[in-house]
Length: 265
Length: 363
Image (cartoon, rainbow over all chains, first blue to last red; front, side, top):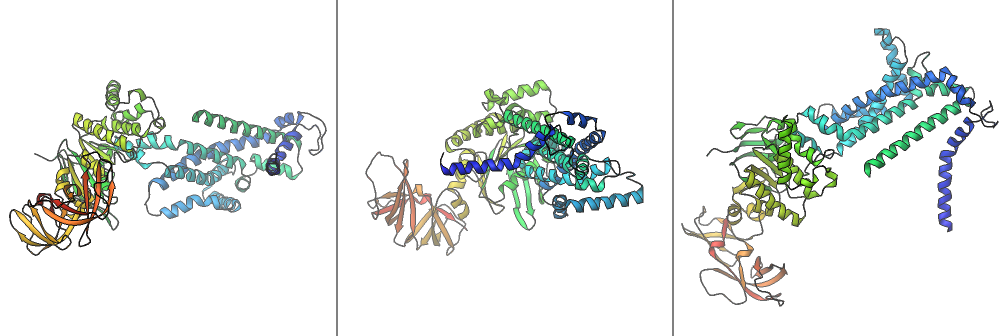
């Protein structure tokens, strides 16, 4: 091995170490018997047991998943419609404004989004009585609004690169416009919609700031719960939870890789 | 006979831009009609109006006696083969071809029968379950053709049908298209920028420029009797000589041209007046080139020098410089096999053509 390639390999190793050593540490410490998270006290799986007995964590995780599933699905439906409108209707009144408003949640600081939504919900509650309680509903709405922007952008770019004459050909062959959407457009943008859904799901599961603003007493999402626990010191069961999440994500990524490989071969 | 497709005063404006400018066109049943023109001449817009993707700003379109001007594409008895072929990438060959019939809710048995017919017609029997990305360009084109024909449309529209194929395949496909058209008797309307494609395919051609038709006629008429300079130059190459009409009668027109240095004669009655500035045009293949002065038999005969030449295998091209400096292109068939050059640079030569070959062009 010459000097140059040794240098390249060490850079690579350093880069990977920087990315993955923290994750490995979390996994290793999740099997730590000691109560103090940073001191090694022998191998044990007792924190996994503790984790599954901790109702607060389970509630928070369940709430997070429910919110992520709901908001990702609504965001995909709305975002796809917005993306279709932007890509297929070149000229309509207020198009620039519409396009700008669709994408603005992506660049808006989360604190601002969270605060403004909170103000909206409070004002709504005072005038209409809804939402009576902030929690699942309000967080789902908040997550949908910003996740929709990502879906719209992904779907729009997919549609832009798609040959418009495919849809015209279907119409030419007797397909009613709505029929064409289901026969041609949707199947062809399905991968983009799936990518958008996954991104929306991840963003929702991940979000701490916006959820903190628009949640009410008693409704903690998983990130909120973890964050509040860590403020009081890292407890070992959080490590166990983190390990489980890393495991799920890894399996998911691996499965996705397997599926795409099978499709291309 | 009543016109099958009749386009009356059709115009299409995009904002201030006039894509199609108030055109009239009549196409008969069973014709293979080409609309020929350069890019941006409005030919594709016209085709899209026939298909129903664009609504004319003015005028009306009738197909088989029915006004379709405001009919949406999915209700018209017209199908189109797109330039990109637009074969649905997520459907197999079979599913692509049967799409049109499925939308009509045709019985399953009938669909299967007609798909088989179509697959046979375009010779894709062995490919019926393939996906489009496993097909070659030529095969994809045939899928697009079969898909457009299966509904037995009254008119088939073809947008640059051969543009994406390589030369050999293009020649073969040309004849296949003509055979299919012959067999089914469907009226074809082809849009193309390729003059050769239009010449070989069509029963009639409309040459289009700036949203208007310059000339409509059979390939022969368009080539041999172009109405104006644009048509003459768009189809093939042509030599033009500027001149002034010196005499005109029912049989011939005499034009004095300083570029040619002599008086040129064109046969036939022309709608010109004495003294009018016009152009006389001759196609390169109608000019003979010889080393010796030909005997005087009424042909137009000019002296010149070989400026340049090119050997193309089946024929040779010569650029002959006249005394006035005007360059004349001559194309001559290489009938004899020979390795020595018949002519070379700066040879003194005579070029001649029969007065019948000359065309008078009005601008």
